[in-house]
Every structure is written in C-alpha cells, then in structure tokens.
Length: 253
Image (cartoon, rainbow, N blue to C red; front, side):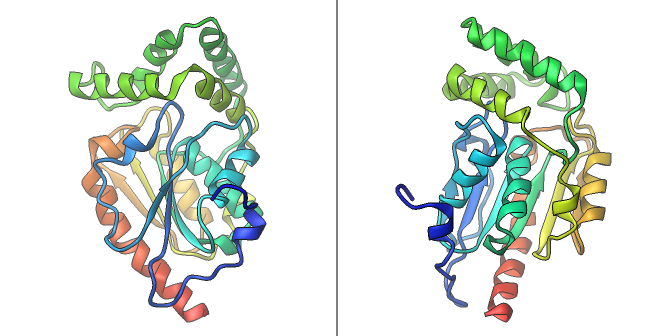
C-alpha cells in the first residue's frame, strides 16, 4: 500500500464476516514463487512481500504496509524472523502466525562471519557462488533432485545481488525474539522439517514452547524449503490457522 505508513494502515478493521488478509514473507534468496505450490485458503487475499531492505526493522515496516488492519503472517526463515519484529512492534496487527523453518535466537559469531563472506561474493558479482554455497542447506537430500536445485537457482537469480546483499545486511540486525514471542496471543502454527540442517527441530520446539497455545508440526524427512518439499503440510496448516484467527477476531470485535 504505497504512501501509507504502518501506523496509518493499522486502523482499518477486518469485518467479522469478511476476508482476512494473509501476508507471505519469503526467506533469504527467495521470492513469491516460494509459495506457488501452497494452497492458501480460498476467499482471503494474499499479499507477497519482497525482502529488499537492509534491516529487520525496515522489513517489518514493509510487512505492515502491505495491507490494512489485522492479517495472518506466513513467514519462512528470515521471513518469520521479520514476523517476530512485527509482533514486537505492532502485536495488534497480527491475527495469526505461521512460522516455518526459522530461528528465534540472536545470531551466532560464525553466522556473522558467513554472512560477511557471502556479501563479499555478491559484491564481487559472484551471485552464482552465493547460490551454490547456500544450496546444500535448502533440501533434505544432498544432492537434491535436479528439479528442486534448478528451481532454487532460478529463484535466487531472480532475487538478484542487490536484494541478496540487503538481506545479508538485515540478517545481522536480528535479535533474540523470545521475549516478544511470549507476548503472542494469536493462533500460531510452527512448522519444521525433521531434517532441516539450517533450522533444526529444536529451534522450533523452543518457539512453540514460548508462544502460548502454539501448535507444532514436525514434518518427517523434510528439509528447509518446506513450501516446495511438502506444500501439502503448509496447505493443511493454513486451512486450520486462518479460520482460527478469523474466529478470534470476531470474538474480539
């Protein structure tokens, strides 16, 4: 919603019988095609956010400006981390949370070093090297099926070096999100693959434990990019989450 600040769009309520918007936030080197296999609930508009700002705070502002009033936030990896910041800044805007393949902890020293190395490669015009370094962590099998690896390469190249560098810079502005997560009072679903080497199941159990009433789905033999490996699981999770969020809004209204 260009021209409106997050504060300005927060005033528009969702009618009790009206559609509830969803805001889909991808991970690093991902775009809206990340969600193309997922069946979002019928009748609810879906807004896709591009990760092109160099801080988690600015990315949170982009999410809040994507639609008016309350919404369900669906985020994967960095996208879910941006969701944590939205919860911290404007909990009244978040009607529901679907947190996928993510990490609520502050960055570790080795992560900062890895992000700097990737940024140097991208800055030197070597985006393909960045893509190849990140590829092994995306899927449960290494090597992953060609159809998935080529799809990932196409998506990451579409994101481009400039946005990739902004995302790497944003990663370094992350902070521990558990204090914010303990304040969440909306329906929340946490989804992870049991063989995600980037964000293993323990990360998600901690998130689900922090959020009162959160539901945890551990997907057997799945990796990081769940929307491609197991879109059926996310489709099912959203089919339960969005009506629950809508009912909560109706009771509150």
